Amino acid sequence: MKTATLKALAEPNRLQIVELLRSGPHTVGEITERLGLRQPQASKHLRILSDAEIVEVHAVANRRIYKLRHQAFQELDTWLDSFRRLWDEKLDRLDDYLQELQEKEVCREDK
Figure 1 (cartoon, rainbow, N blue to C red):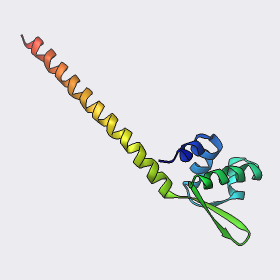
Figure 2 (spheres, rainbow, N blue to C red):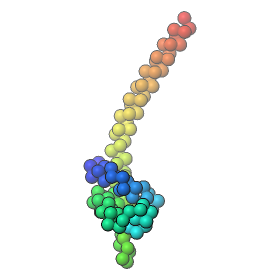
Figure 3 (cartoon, rainbow, N blue to C red):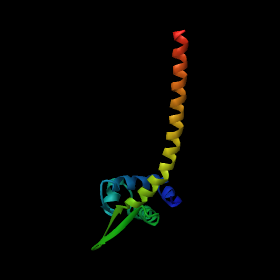
Figure 4 (spheres, one colour):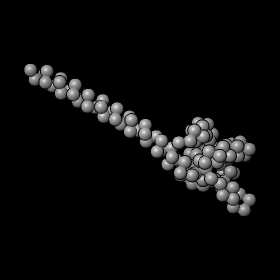
């Protein structure tokens, strides 16, 4: 998993851009209008997202259309999956322990 991905997503405006792009491709103008950003500010954030390989850009005439790169999120999901497995194992052990305690309590009440 790339550190650049997390760094890029850590900035609130960039995260808002990613959230907006979840609904589909948008031009810089649409992004600035919907998020209330100035064009230079939006372009700076989009360049960082592009450098981190989170978004890709396609030129259509004089417009730049940005869309999410699904591969970046697949890589992030793979990285997060290792943590999910770790927590699932810990929670399973906790569940087993709590069940054991509950069974002991039931045995005490039956006596």
